[in-house]
Length: 259
Image 1 (cartoon, helix red, strand yellow):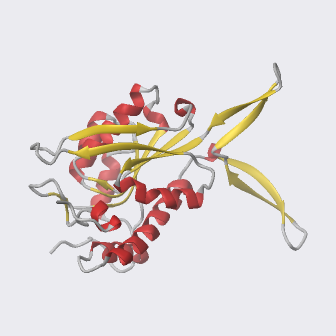
Image 2 (cartoon, rainbow, N blue to C red; image 1 turned 180 degrees about the vertical axis):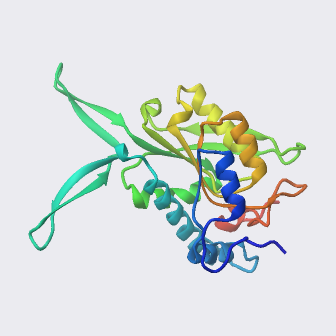
């Protein structure tokens, strides 16, 4: 039996502390009892598709809120509003995904892409609703990458891309895939973006469950990459599945069975 290495008071696992020292750009959610309960429900093999989708969406929403909470201050604009008590309140608001500026030369509007999301199909599509619920106007692109199950290390292959216009201008790109196992899909997706002119500083990779092997491989290739995860598991088995893991996330979320 594998333990989450935490008590019922929650907190940061000892293993996570070591990983964060090793990888300075790695962010891991603090393991509250509520977060642990979500993981418990998702990992349970008896959880049906309807329940899996329900609790997965809750976990995605929680992780994305955490991601937005650790963005630097320049991603937020100072904003003063009037409360119902007719008292001013100075707060802030997240920058718009797309901003428009007037071109004084010909009086046209120029658009600037600030924030965008990219899901690694198909499992990454499960995170799109959560991102759009928090940032309604955000453009979301897709990269179709699949593991070749007939290769020894389950090598990733690129099949399709459909990305937002002017993606190289984006201030921040949220690359989404629920699982970081071997790291092959993540590395290939980043390689694809860099070939288009995107820099590693523009990318934040967001995933629900990671493992040490995947983190090591990705950071060996891209040490400056920002990774945000909800949980780091024990490791991979001989079939390159995360343990204790969650099974095939895409199959469980979309209610399909791989032939």
